[in-house]
Length: 212
Image (tube, helix red, strand yellow):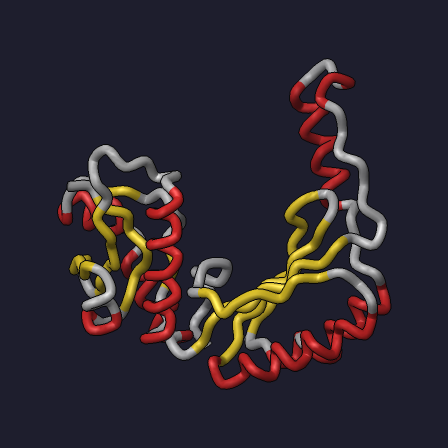
C-alpha cells in the first residue's frame, strides 16, 4: 500500500502512535497510508494529513516534507531521503525546540498581474511576472511596526514575495515565544493593514537553517 510521507523526526516516539514511523538512517519518517483508489486531493485525506501534522507538532518539532511525497515501500522512502538525512538531522538538532510562524501581508500597492496574451515570448512574460511579484511592497509604517514588535522575537526571519498582491514574513521562533508573537500580532491590528498570522508550523522554510 502506498503512503504519504509527512515529515522527518529525531525520535520514533515523536511519530508513534499518531503515524507510522519509517527508520531512515539516523531519523524517522512519519507516514500515513493511502488506499490505492484514493486520490491525493481527496478532502478526507487532506484533512487527515493536516490533523496528523498538527498533532505531531504538538509532540515535537519536525521537518516538514511537502505534501504529495508518496512512497510505495519503506525502502522507497529511505532511497528518496538518504541524500537529505544528514542535513535534516543537523537542522533538527539545532532547532528542535523551535517552530515556524508566518505573517502574510497585503501589499500596499499591488501590481497588476501581466496578461500572458500581451507577450510574444514566454521569457518576456516571466520577466514581467517577476517584476510584478517583486514590485509589491509592505506599507512602510506597518513594516516598521513588524520590525519593532515581531522580528525581535524570531531567531531567524525571511521576507519573501509570494505573488503580486502579498508579501510573507517567515519566522523561526522558540516555542516559548509563540504567545508573544501572537500578542504582537494583536497589537499590529491597530495599524489597519490586512494581514494573516498563522502557525505554529513544522520546519520548512528554515529546513536548511544553519546550526547556531
